Length: 407
Image (cartoon, rainbow, N blue to C red; front, side, top):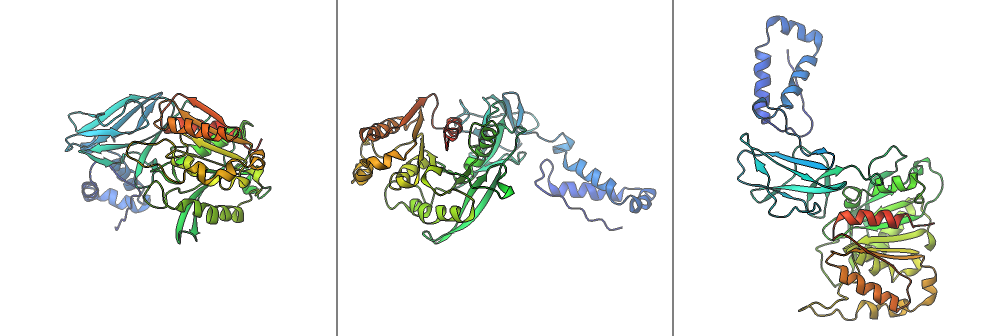
């Protein structure tokens, strides 16, 4: 009898070669009665035994479970008997830093248990100084240059998965004529969009430095936040476009290639391929950190296109002089003087919203930016609460900002 078996997906525990050898031995030791019975049974018995073997850890031990969430506690585990040190890299988890180390037991299993608030958290293991994804966790989140393992702790209904109608998130590839290459963005369409009826307002949502167009949909929970707001009548159904903000290495100054891509390619693509409204009153734009700066760099020169602007943990970069760093000339205020003093453009701006945490390293930049716009008679809303430069506050900002749009 010839039997071919295929396993899909990553396998941990004993190595694949050892597992296949054990299966061959198992087949060889099967008695003649079983061999006659196997053609009648198909390979069901072998498949069951095969999967049982794959589920075992080293030396037949139970498989490693990581991460394990129990209430507000997360236990991270990694089987690495030969590692000298295993740390945890998870910048958004309070108290976790470069000194956070896992403990090792006699079997070579490293583990650590932490208590966290509800939310989504990116993490990596640092195995002898090298970043490693959690091999037992299929959930991941992308950033611009690497990937992270992802864990969600439920308990905040506004961003949990609830029994409500859900929208859809698509990965969209488009050709950027301005950059002369293919690019990607994520697009959220609200519940009911697939029925092919009606046109919707559009909200462009930008990520921060180091992240990518995947970030808002994974660690940012944008789809679930919008689903829950819409289901509760706290937000209007809308299309949300999450773009790739990096066009190359992050740098201050120089030509704004992202702005060119956004205006020349992203907006036309969205308006040609999605049922979105194209008047100013039905367009919004917001971003966090770098994305907040990009919101200002695009939204102010094209203020006639946007009725809602949101700036999360950000402002005009360089508005506060730094020691040893020359002030950019002309300044943002000087470059956009005509628009800043155009009273007619201000009339159509329904909301200009800023929010930054008190412990954020850009809080002074936010304050100075808000003061500059108020000097030019913009009606700005500025919220300064608890928190730092993390996804913990950015998800909250999205929840608040999205609930005010298109009302």
